[in-house]
Length: 400
Ligand code: ADP
Ligand code: MG
Image (cartoon, rainbow, N blue to C red):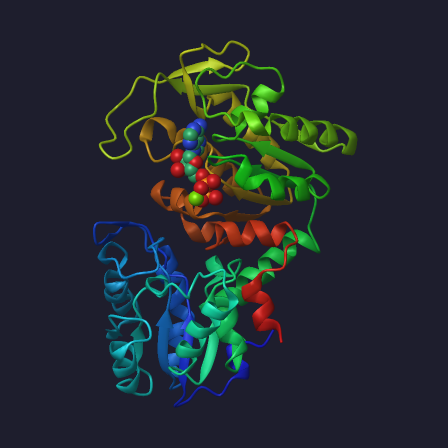
C-alpha cells in the first residue's frame, strides 16, 4: 500500500476520506476521539502544501440533507485541533463544495458536508455509487484513504473514488493495519480475547475465526447471557438471542475440542429493568450468582467475582484483544466490569488492543489514559471484519 510519503502533494487538491463519525448530543460532540485520530494525516498534508479537502459520513441520514447529522460542529472542532480555520462546504458535490475547493490555498483545509446526504454514497447500485464518485473526483487531484472506521463499507467515497484518482493510505490506516497484522500473522501467546457488547449476532464471525487462533476467549456484556443460557443457566429477563443458542452451543463444543478456554461470568450485577442512560438516576443493583438467577432480574454487568476471574486470565497473556463493554457502562451502576477489564489490560504486560466504538468511548469515559494501551482502534466493525479475515473494500481499493 502506498502511503502519503509516496505522493507529491504540494499545490495539489487532496481528498482525504476520514472517519469523523463522532457521537453528538444536539450539536455538542460528546467524544472527539475520531477527530483527534484524523488530525495527524491532515496536518501533515497541509504542512506539505496540499489543498486539503476532508470528507466523512456522520450517523445514518437517509440519503438526503438532515440538519441533525450536519458535520458543521465537527468542522469547528477540527479547526480547534488543527489550530487553523477549516472552511465548511454546506453540500457534498454542489455549488458550495465547488466554491470551497476553488477557494482553498496551499496548506489550507476544508470539510465537506456529510457524504451520506447524497444517496450515491451508500447505494448498493454500482452505477449510482459510481456516478457520485465521478462527481467527487472532479473536486480533487489525489485521494488519501484514512477513514479506518469505514473501510469495511463498499461506499462511493471509500471504494469507488480511490479507483478514479491516484491514491495512498493515510497514517491512521497504516497504523491500524500494522497493529491488526500483529493479531493475525504474528501473534504472541498466550493470546486472550475479551468480547462483550450488546448482541452475539454482531460478533459471530469474529468468534468463529478466533476459535482457531485465540488461547482464551472471555465473554461479557449482553452477549454473555446467550452463552450462559446455552450452558443451561437461567438468565431472567437479560438480553437473550434465542435464535443463536444452537450456534453458541456449537462454539462451546468446538472450543472444548480445540482446547480453547471459554470463560463466562460466574456472577452478574442485575436490576429489575434497563437503567435510564440519559438522566442516569441511581438504581438498585444486586449481585447474583449465575447458578441462582432470579426470573425477574436483568443482568447489566459482570459481577465482582467475574471481574477477578477475568483479570486473572489477562494477567499472564502476551496479547489481548478487547472488543465490547462488559456491561451497560454508560450508567455508573454498571460500569465496574468494564472498568475492571480495562484496568486488567493495563496491569498485564501484554500487547493490548482495544477495538470498537463503544469500547474506546468507555475507556475515555472511565478516564483511563488512552496512551497506556497498546492501541485503541478507531474502527469497531472494520477491525472485527479484518480479524475475521474478510477483504475490506476500502483497503482493497488502496492496494493497487
Ligand atoms: P463496540 O461498539 O465497542 O463494538 P457494541 O456496540 O457491541 O460495542 O456494544 C456496546 C453496547 O453494549 C453498550 O451500549 C452497552 O450498554 C451494551 N451492553 C453491555 N452490556 C449489556 C447488557 N448486559 N445488556 C444490554 N446491553 C449491554
Ligand atoms: Mg457499538
